[in-house]
Image (cartoon, rainbow, N blue to C red):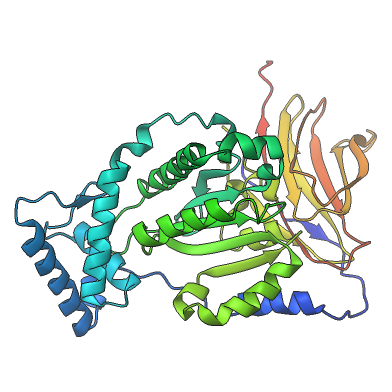
Length: 408
C-alpha cells in the first residue's frame, strides 16, 4: 500500500535563542569542510602526469613479475590491460600522491602480505567469533549512493571478562585481527572495481564506551594493516557518539592530517547518531540501535522521512484501512525525548476513537517502535509525536504495511 498522506504539523512555537557551547562549535567546525568527492577512476579524467604515472607503474609490475607472474589482488589480475586493474593500481597511486616508486613499493609489500596472510581465503574461514558478529564489526546495508557500510563498535570491551577472552594474549589478539580483516574483505567483495562504479565502503565507528587505553595496541595494529594494505578503500569515515574530549583532540591532531583525509571525516557528538547517519544512509538501512528502522533479518521496506521541529507536534495519518485489515508500522525519531501515541479513528461518526497506544514519554535511547493493530471497522490510524517540550529539531522516519483480511 502506498503512502496516501503526509505528516500534518502544528506550527512551530516561539522559543528563545541559545548559545552554542565551545564543544559544539568545535564539532561543527570539524564537519563543515568541503565533503570528500570520490574518484570516478575513469582514465579519461586523469591528468597527463597521472596517466604517465599509471603506465609507469604497470611497466614496473611487468618488469618485476613478468607476463606469466602471479600478480592478482581481490581476484583481479593486475597485469591485465583492463579497467578493473586500473582501479586497483590507481588506489595505490593516489595513496602515494602518484609517486610511482613509492606506489610500487607499497603494492609489492601488500602483495607479499596478502600471500603470507592468506587474505584471499580469509573470507571463508570460521574464526569462532559468533558473539562479535553484528556487534563489534559488521557489514550492514548501503549508503544512499550504494556504498557498503561497515559498522564498528568496541564498547563491549569495557567488560573485563570479554576483553580478556578476546585480547588476553598475543595469539588471541592475532586471531581477532584476522577476524577484523575478514569483515573488511567481505565488504570489499561487494565493490565493483569499475570506473564510475562503487569502489569503496563507508566506515561508521561508534565511540560510546570504547576503552581507549586497553584497545590501544589492537587499534594501532588494525589502523596500520588498513593503511598499508587497503588504500583508498574508505569513501567516508563517520564517527558517532563522540565524547566531548574527542573534539579537543581532533583540533590538535587535525592540522597534521591531509586535506584529503580530513575531507572523509564526519564527526557526530553523543545523542546525534540518527541525525548524522540519515544524511548519508536511508533510515531503513540504519540499525535500530542508532536510530534507524533496520533489524536483523528484516525486510528492507522503504521508509518515509520527516522532521519534527522544536515546539511542534506531528500527526501521521494512515488512511484507507478496511475492516478486518491488520496494519503494522515502524516509527522512530532520532534522540526521541518526546511523547508518542497511536490511535485508530473509525470512519463512522458514531464510533469511538480507540487508543491503540496511550501517550508515553520515550527516552533518548529508545529504539524504533514496531506495533500492529487489526481493525474491526474501516478508518485511519493516527501516529502522534509531541515535541512541544523541546527546542531541538529531530529527524524521523516511519513505514507501514497493511494486510487485508482473508475472511470473505
